Length: 315
Image (cartoon, rainbow, N blue to C red; front, side, top):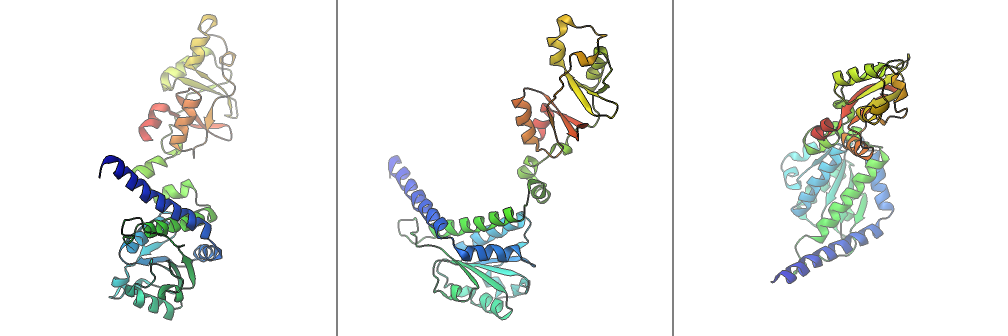
């Protein structure tokens, strides 16, 4: 194969799979709604099972649900037949993946679940299959073509199954109002955890504060000591009146009298943020407003400060 044939082949695979995903989206019906509602009301855990490639997809779907706060585990049906069936409880929901719906390795697990009255949700392509007939809710994949030249290797079918699992997971995420703060709790490490850090985790509480009747000289001294390139003016209730930056000083240098009130050159509307703002969002905010320090407030009371350099180091 030459380069152009390779690219044509790759594009063909993606075209087949993308069409299948579009067909899948159009096929969603009340069964999908029932599956979402069942998982929403789940008292136990999700047990997701499948054989071979379907097992790999099942493990990924289980990991996605767990990462969003719904306890989920992958159960290999072969292992279940050899002692791992004990993980299944009455309050659980079993999601079983099988393109054909006829994988014989699923028999013992399905029999056990039926005897224990455990709800079964199937994802398969055949509504007349053994799996579909033994399930309470069937999510049937629409007719599709596997993307390999033999139309045999699990490609399109596994892509559709994975996408359907993502759709379930994301719908439940929205229903449960699972936010970035909750996600951060479950992802404290790695790149995701770092990306979800908030200003509360890095802010400096030793603020460059001066009283509203302070002089420009007072502001310069405070700016020099705290090294944030700014001084924040507060009233007797510790509410923000304004801010003076080193830029304000430079712009006013020709007419500056160090004994003048700091209020004479202050900016009455400083850019501020709340402590729960993501560091990545704070960087965007500072760049947008061409500032290097950001004041963190609570009900117009300053509680912390960060600079751009520190944010970039922790982003």
